[in-house]
Amino acid sequence: MSNAEVLGRFVWHELLTTDTAAAAAFYPKVLPWRTAPSSMPGYTIWMAGQTQIGGLMALPAEAGATPPHWLVYVGTPNVDATCSQAQGLGARVVKPPADIPNVGRFAVLSDPQGATFALFTPGSGPPPGAPPAQGAFSWHELATTDVAAALLFYGQLFGWTKGPGHDMGAMGVYQIFQHGSSQVGGMCNVQGPSTAPSWLSYVSVADASRAVAAAKAGGGRLLHGPMEVPGGSWIAMMMDPQGGAFAVQEAPRTASQKPAAAPKPAAAAKPPAAQKPAATPAKPAAATPSTAATAAAKVAKVAKVAKVAKVAKVVVAAKVAKKAKKAARKARKAGRKVARQVRRAGRKTPRKAARPGVRRAARKAARKTARRVRRSTRGAARGLRRAARRVRRAARRRR
Image 1 (cartoon, rainbow, N blue to C red):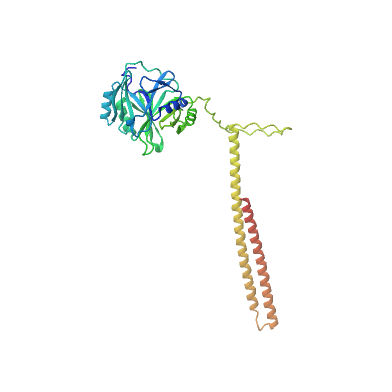
Image 2: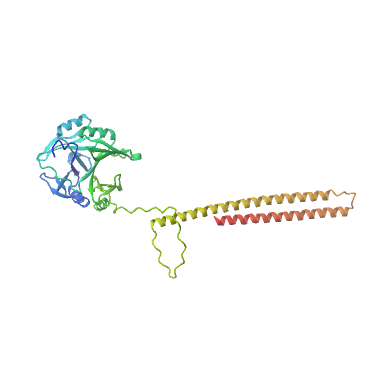
């Protein structure tokens, strides 16, 4: 690869951590990697197959409170010129351009929003080999405070172009960026004011869930996933035991790996004819997704009808009870009215037209008649009230 072709490519990934021995033991358990020594003291090479894909070194003392992290290296034909251009666009130089003997020249920068990255111009050594099927870095993601400004900055610096965007609701738009015609990464908003802008690198694996299980067993922590993303890939974001964040990406699964979709019930299917029961009960066949769905629909329909009928019975019972109560009130009122009329008739018996005994007998008869009317109306009212109570109890039992 010539220096002209290297512009804008992710060419190296370096883990700076507080415990290189622990990291060297952890990552090969999670990813299809192994370690190899280098010509530089204190520097270890990450190998995926026969390809060198990254490095491992101790976090420098001058880093201060900077936590362990992965540093991405982006290629450029001229580190010094690109470094000056980046400064003119608002970047800050963290480590000025310097040579790595027999390797190339590099510089470390902080973009205008605060994410750290490195520039690299390869030396005259052998060109890198083809990326392996598993274990290569497959995607790069920038979490930033200003996606539009970051896209403009990196576009001017490396020629990256804007790709499609995916609306993630409250999280904003996930903006894909391209190198040439290939989609190589995405940019999104940082999640929360306490999160610093940073780059996150994804490594291709055969099984994301297996990588997550291995990371947990090795003392790592799962941050998000595994989950399927647009395009069919499966991703998971994790943190190694020292605090370095990384992610894995599993290629889209084939049809045989995905669970079979449940077939839809046949439309307007006629019910089978009733059959006579066999002499020996047969073992019921396992229900298919379509028959299970149909049965569930029937059960739901029956439950709905029963609920409606139950409500209707309760409403009718309440209406009957109300009518019975009203009829009892009317009966009591009518009885009191008749009793008053009888009493008035007895009092109106002419004193001169009858002897005292006759008048007393008439008043007694009127009172007796009034009592009989009151008793009969009270009895009728009690009967109606009892009927209303029976109706209400029956309605409560149906609930």
